[in-house]
Structures are given as structure tokens and as C-alpha cells.
Length: 372
Image (cartoon, rainbow, N blue to C red; front, side, top):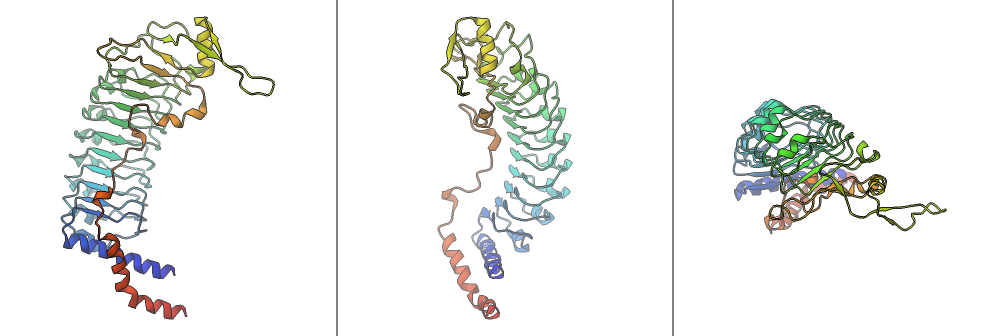
């Protein structure tokens, strides 16, 4: 039966490619077909602009793909790629590229030749360093490299003045360049679950910044000269699950605790008893450290930012995962190419599949007779 299904699948793939060629389609989706080797016919689809090959079993990035010079979107995530050809830099029109979940381990310098690239995902590819050539991607808007083995990022990357979404969570980042403020368009910066020991003050000079996620690092203090006045749109800094949460909180020139803190005690059965308000600011500070209540900064001038900035210092580890969904924001951790909307699906696709099956039924009878 597996041979029969494989036969049907391969013929269906060819039928989809032939249809794309005949109709000069700009979009071709071959995701989830368990493809191990891309059919050579695909490289004649010179009109295709959006090519989806994710969730297959492709182990070699065929150089021939670079002949499809009209490509603007290429998804190869969830395959078995172990290397990239230097010719990938020939895809000069590429806007969206997804290489996530492949055992690549390395990004070659030629990635920097993709001069029109706006969205680039390389999540969980075993990456130990980002090539400095990434600084050449001057149009880059979104970059995701979560779940790798990065310890820092190249200073050249901070020259990306159009980068708005940066997701580097679940790495081993210990330090950041002092020039992070050069990323003047940065809106969302996710550095969750790394090894940062110093609060990255330079990021707070990015005037468009709204959300800064620093939870689950090794940060033990907030800079004495912390100044958020240059970032009027800043909504939240997440510092949960850092050593700072385990320390007593001294008075800070800018930080003030919520007016009414609460403490929780356990009854004889170990269950949390009702919360008790604290009227003492010092006692309230201790309660905040122990019971995961948010810190608040004074509101910026009303015409800039009517609501107070929240610095989250929640100690409840169960809430860390849910914090991935940032309030009033798109979840940058899982931003991805929109593979295919319902409007993009050809009405004849299903009919074509059954037509392909009908065409190969005579051949399938051979398998049936052999099975008997």
C-alpha cells in the first residue's frame, strides 16, 4: 500500500507542477508531500513567485532553484537541509525566506546578497553565530533565530535601520553590542531565555520600541540611570525569572511600586489563603518580589503615552510560557510567512487531485495484481 500511495503522491506533485507551468501560476505549494528530491520539472516554472516546500524531507538544496529568479517567497522549513549553495545569493528578488528547523548549523555569507529580503526565519537550525554579512540586508523588517546556540550577535546587524521585529529567544546570548540603539525602527525585541547578565540599556534608545522581553535571563539589577523618556511608546519590559526578582528592591528614582501590593500566605493544607493588602511601601516592595506583582514606572506625558509602563517581574514560572503572547502585539516569536490563504487556493485543485488519481489507476492495477 505504501508503494501505491507513493505512486499517487509523485504523480500528483507532477500534475501540480504541470498545472503551474500551463497556467503560468505565480504561486506553487508543494508542502507536506514527503518530497525527498525535487522533480526537475519544477525548475521550468519560471513564472512562480511564491514557492512553498516546507514540511518535506529534502536533504539537499538544489542549485537549480536559484534559476527561479522571480521568487519573492521561498519556504524550506521543516526539511533535512544540512547546507546551502553559494548560488542562493542569486535570488535577488527574494523578500521572504524561511529556513527554520533544518540541521544547517551555519548560515553562509552569501545570505547577505539577498538585498530585497524583508523577512528571514532561521529558528532551530543549530546556529552558533550570525554572519556579519547580515548587515547588508538593509530592507530586513523581521528576523527570527530562536532556539539556536547564539552567544552574541554581530555589531553589523545593529546597522539594520528598518528592522522592527527581532526574536532571539532560547539562545545562549551573554552579551549584546553597545550599538543596539542604531536599530532605530525596532518595535519588538524578544531576548527571553538567554544568559544576559547586564540590562541592555542601549535598546532603550530605540525610539519606536514597544515591547522588550528579557525574562529568564541572569539580570540582577536595573541601571540607576534608567531613562525611558526617550521611548514614549514603550509598553512593557518583561524581567520575570531573573535574579533581580529574588532580591529586595531599594528605592529607585524612576521605578515606583504599585500603590497597593498584596501578600499571599499558605494555610495548613498548603493552599494559598486570601490576599492581604499592604500599606507599607517597604513591605509592599518585598511582597512584589515574592508574589509576582508588576512594577510600574510613572506615566510619560499624557500626549505621548497615557498609560504607565509596566516592568513585569512575575516569579510565577507557570506564566512564563503564556507571556509569549505579548499584550497589544503580534507574537513575534511565531511570526511566519502566510503560506496560503483560502483565496489563493485554486478551485480546481481538489478536482485535479482526483483527476490525477484516475489517470494512474491503470498503473495501480499492476500493484494490485502483484499484491494478490
